[in-house]
Image (tube, rainbow, N blue to C red; front, side, top):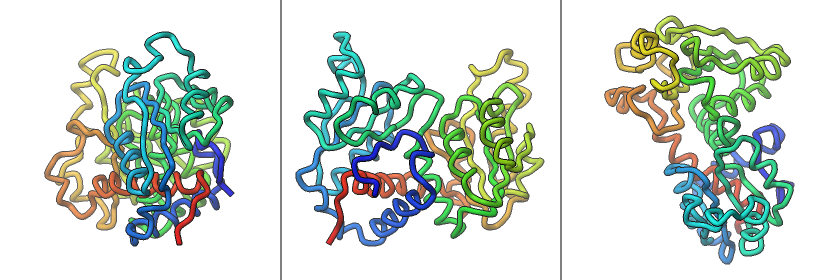
Amino acid sequence: MLKDRNYIDPSDFSVKELDEVMDLAQEIKERPSDFCHVCDGKLLGTLFYEPSTRTRFSFEAAMLRLGGQVIGFSEPGSSSVSKGESLRDTIRTVGSYTDIITMRHPKEGAPNFAGAYTYVPLINAGDGGHQHPTQTLTDLFTIREAHGRLDNLVIGLCGDLKFGRTVHSLIKAMSAHTGITFVLISPEELRVPEYIKSTILDAKGISYKEVERLEEVIDDLDILYMTRVQKERFFNEADYVRLKDSYILDLEKLEHAKEDLAILHPLPRVNEIANEVDDDPRAWYFRQVKNGMFVRMALIMKLLGVDHA
């Protein structure tokens, strides 16, 4: 049972429990009208301590489509946080008014701290460069939809692998499945942190390799997960200029990719996926965005313990 649980980290749920959430999300996607009143009378609190568009709107749309309501803030300046209120007190206060809370915070570990003081289920909507578990659920659901499985896949992660919390969460979640190979595509400055390689990939004996150029490996991939490479992450501009075009996915690079490649991106994108790719059937990122709403609808239902007729 997931009722009254928190969802702070992808490992908070077992593979079986994640499958239950994704199975429910699939039901919602196929028959949305069956679920439009399951959260009547329920209230979601949204505490966003840093800017967000997709994640915040997705949670709000999810609760509203389930028949519930939403209160909260989209930046801390509009709340008592600006007066110095502690996170502990904010969580206790909002938990007194609502049935479930979702929180995004710039400090890594903040949701773990808040989870110790909440009266209601708490969902981590992203904490610093650490984890983004509901994006991970969305990614898993989209990968399963694209390939019909979550095992025996070659997954390319491309771009900012050092600071990208979506990448860190996905590595952690996919490492629970068998036959996974990761191809880590990034400049040396933005490689996956050593602690993730040592505590997850090496510790579990998961196959991976690190390369600098997407063109070298794109023909091997079943999944290509693109992220932004930001100029400010580089120590010198010459390295950025030398490598930046390597991380722009266009139709020319896709000529060598598999026909059933699924291209994912947590969004927002800047220029790392050319607009011409949007119409390619292998582009899954806008379907991925919509899937995020269905996944969050399912997660809210599971944590509240509500069901449909």
